[in-house]
Length: 146
Image 1 (tube, rainbow, N blue to C red):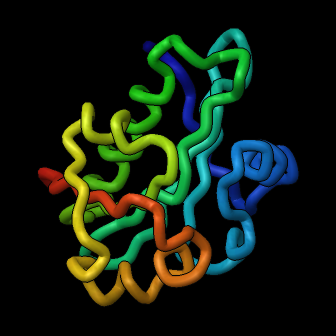
Image 2: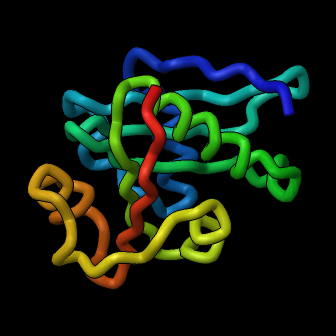
């Protein structure tokens, strides 16, 4: 599946609108350390993804595919791209919190962990500590860094 990934210098209004429509956190998007990407192909916008580097690991901030592009494997392709990007930035592992996509991430090799297993840098992130509800599933995948 061919697509272009464009890093956004700042969280654009269209990104914020899509995240809000999907019920994903937007309160801390302008803080340092977050990288936002727009994914598109010849047919137009596919969706967005974001990473937050918290050495030695990274946190997947969001993956969202717009409604009209769902069901075509785009979420899996975006996740794979984000994993490769994080590994290229020397992240040892990827963490995430999800309230609705646990099965999706399990299919891609992520394991659910108790929140008490979070490394200090992940536990101190706003995503982990305040933005995502306590009911969100905390997940991890080890990366093979280049």
